[in-house]
Image (cartoon, rainbow, N blue to C red; front, side, top):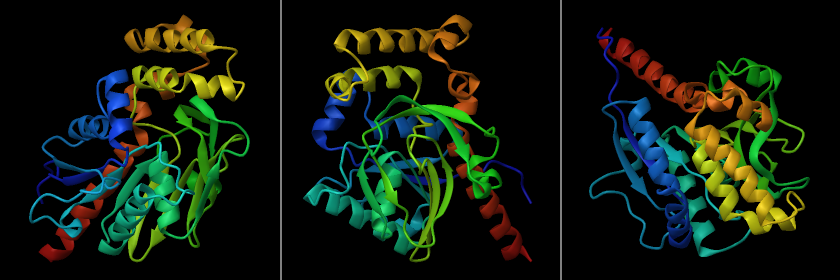
Length: 294
């Protein structure tokens, strides 16, 4: 059997509203879906990557395409609040239910985990303790998470880029909790529903430090209201240091000041969950080829 890299067809589901997409582009140069497209093309060279905006009223797959034709679906972050009944949340949850029903494997970060949770019968709420702004600290795999392929390579405790004001309140029946921390009980999970499987994290392995800084600046007002900063100038000072570390990831002084290690500053390590998910897809593809070739 050939050892060549599998060529995948991916679908990125970007549930940001048009206004949120514009704000993010104005801030960091690209929407959440565009960030995913860039990362996926680097992790899986040659992959065909399509994009859909399921929250939009006119969302549609490319002509002639169906969910079953994709190797995987990737759900991005989003400012949608999944506990609110709006046309945008209904459309997004309905899309995820269709992904589960199609049996297409899916991965999601931040709101992506929340969308999959609600679609499969779980619940989401505003953060009960505090917003996680900038980084989720001391994420710890559960017993199940320590041997789950999603978290392969992660140490016993690690930090990751994160900024969210909502969290999973209750995972759906049959889901497996893979990691949590002191602030957010559900930091990683596997959800199986209607014949489909989803791996997700509450944090953002896909974003670089420049995007962390941009997110902080966009949400400065809410961070001050939450008591995480005394004023906009505090947020800007924090974001400026993060930007500087993005430009010079080898600066130990900045990493020390920000309390970060290579799990965040080394892109290869930061992308662990995405790489692990794609490798699991490749492994499944190889197993299918072996069975078919018998």
